[in-house]
Image (tube, rainbow, N blue to C red; front, side):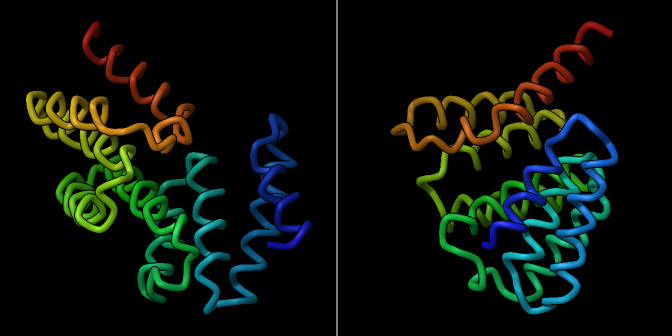
Length: 167
């Protein structure tokens, strides 16, 4: 990935909404100019996802799936599943999220974050016991660092679940 695209991704994490939109615009333009570049669409989807634009993010993620995830670097393949699965959950598409994350668990059993995000899907579906089982599975598995990669999102989702319980 070029320096300009790295800077655009960094812009998406700015506190300034104007800068965020500029970053997203650069990533969108790059993806649209390179329709067969799965990495470009994955990064664009991630920027949209980070900016709480889930429906748009899912369109970009779906484009990557349509191209074939083999066009992504091996380390990005489970990330695509996690991010798309989480986005589907946020869009209320619980069954689709579950199916995608179960597929990811079979393909990448070593990635603990997949079980954690699947647990969130199960909480959303009202399957708390299944969620606890998945969380223990991730907790007791050898540490792979993947859960830490999603600390911001997981912290937000945890707080959201807790606030739902007290409401």
